[in-house]
Image (cartoon, rainbow, N blue to C red):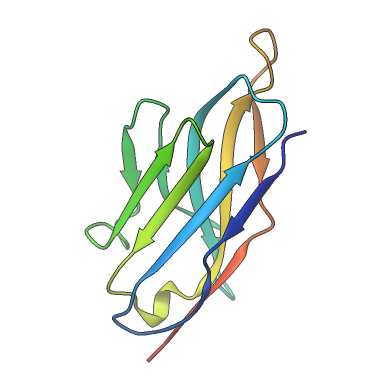
Length: 121
């Protein structure tokens, strides 16, 4: 299994910015889609943004225009730049990656343990 490790969360004032990072390690043949999810208190986990191996992106309406997802295929990393943060962005943010350990392996989903983002008003 390939672990995912997130970083970059923290406490920020409303209107501020954060950059979340996630790195995948271990045996990796290819990483397909990478994504960021979040789960706020009292809410279900939701997709924030995703990016394909070739760079196609998708954003939740709630963060569209304020966030940018990017990836580095050499470093096996994915980033989420979040600007103009709002209190409603407060949540635990989870990194997700769909990857193959080898060319003959099936695609599997891996999850990080999450990083807390807290936005104060």
